Each structure stands twice: as structure tokens, then as C-alpha cells.
Length: 208
Ligand code: SF4
Image 1 (spheres, helix red, strand yellow):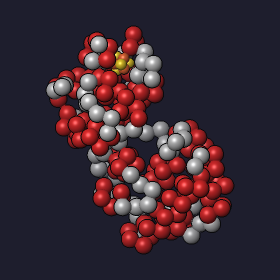
Image 2 (cartoon, rainbow, N blue to C red; image 1 turned 90 degrees about the horizontal axis):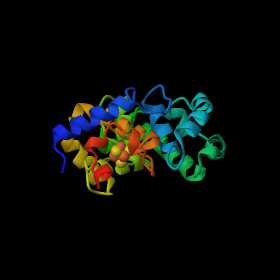
Image 3 (cartoon, rainbow, N blue to C red; image 1 turned 90 degrees about the vertical axis):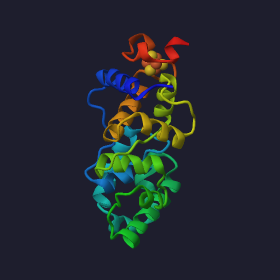
Image 4 (cartoon, helix red, strand yellow; image 1 turned 60 degrees about the vertical axis):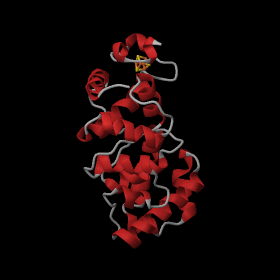
């Protein structure tokens, strides 16, 4: 088990690789980030960023999106995959925002995860990047990287979120998650490039 001091050193090493880690989903406000994050499931940020400019022009806020024509919405988001399911989630989410939150995105985990199509990972992304509330999104990259490093020992995202939350100061949660994600995409890929990794001296996987 790593200590908070070791976790700090590991993060510092990873931040040398990814000094400007941030979400790669282009957005102008919490509503847009919520929509983009829902669309990013089983897709890539690049693909989502290709789709969202036209989507946000047509549906700039929850009130307009709540009244969207489902087939029009499906056409606009088609290339992100699972478009019927995602269109249903977007419509349900927007309608719930209008009905229960005056069309605004609520800044609480409980309220966000009560919205259709919104799980903990999506809620944490929006809280941390658009609402000023520290959030620790755990995706497949975070799972892989943090288990290899020996920071956590679980495949369960909620357990990993709790374990990382104990090791990393709350104010750093969002940036830490962004850093792990970029590390998983660029260096600690399924076949990891340990040779060039600054965290190698502190990594369990590299010393098996
Ligand atoms: S040393 Fe290898 S396994 Fe460990 S974090 Fe770096 S790339 Fe991943």
C-alpha cells in the first residue's frame, strides 16, 4: 500500500509528463460539459468534439434540448455511437434539469447522479471541471494506471475513487484524475512504455 507521501511523489512524476492535464472535451459551461461527457461513453473525445459545435448551436441549453426532436438529435450525435441510447439520455437529462433544477446543472453528486444517463464518472467530470467542486472521475485509464502504480488494488471504480480520495488531497482530485487519464492514453497504455516513464522508480508494475 502506498502512503500519501508516495502518492504525492508519483503524481509529481506524472505531472512532469503532462503539466497541462485537463479534460479534452471542449465546452463553455457545465451544461455543455454534461452533454459532451454523456456523449463520450464508448467514443473518443475527438469524435465528441467534432459533433458538439453543431449540437450546442442547435440546443444551447437544457430548456431547448428538453424539447428536441429525438430523430433530429440522433442524426446530430450519430457518429459518437450508441446514438439512440445517448439521445434518450440527453432528452431525459435535459427534461429533468428543467423540471427539477430550473434548467441549471446542480453542483452536487447526489443531484447529478439522479439525472437520467448520469453516473458517478460523468458527475465527477462535471463537478471538477465546470462547477468548482473537486471530483475524481475513474475511467478505464485511471483504473489501469493507478493499479499498476500500486496506488490502489481494485477493479471497482467506486472503490478506486475512495482509495485515491484517501491518498490524494481533495483540492488535487480533478487534476490528478486528468493526469492519470492522459498517462493512460499516452504512456501507460495497455502495453506500457515503462522505459520512458518518470514514475518508473515508484511503480509496482515496473518492479514485479
Ligand atoms: S512505469 Fe510503466 S506501468 Fe508504471 S506507470 Fe509508468 S508506464 Fe505505467
